[in-house]
Length: 305
Image: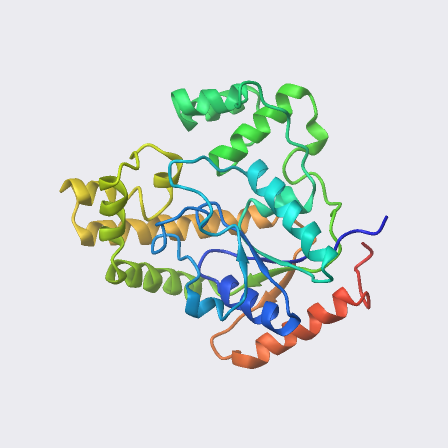
């Protein structure tokens, strides 16, 4: 049976994934699937840099604004929902474009998540009850590398506990979908400057008011959604324990560190086709990527896959 088709866009935060996804979707008459861990939450728009109606330019976006902030969301949830959307779009003759971060690896490589007991695995219970430090301790006991994300820590412990080490993150390079996996690369100094400016724009757009509104409407400080960068740093500001200026600097620093960790993680994915972006590329960059994507989906070059 032939593989279903999918176009993937990866890259560090603030690298321009959203704009590229919309451009390709418009050119190909397609849709975008968000692979972001936080854009699924309603009323969390500014801090997640969620695509706006104007930015979407009429392109349908899936897995955006579909959960309440009090609900949980994991790589397994993303994989299940995204697979269904990809199948439906392929049935309609469209090649969807998935855009986002680290959750996407589980989708592309077809991770087989273990069944849960009582809605949660043993390690998810440990995370909820004792925090990610307990997961780090368990991984260190096993001499295992510690992933950057608590959900990935849970996933790795599930794998190690089952004895199935062949499916560890980064170990499988066989893709279950047919289509290019694009990674946006740019000079580190330029990326960090873009991050700093975007965080400043978030502050001016009303991030403090967004966080305050979430808390006032009953969203718990400790829930998963409020642990995202941009939200956890603002909670002390709402309490009067941190200034806006201090929060902005902290969000910028944490976002830069996150981007660096993302780039490190992507090195585990050798099938990524990196495209360099410079400030002067403009429309030419978009057109060149479109031409490459079209050649790939038409089967002119599948890199042996």
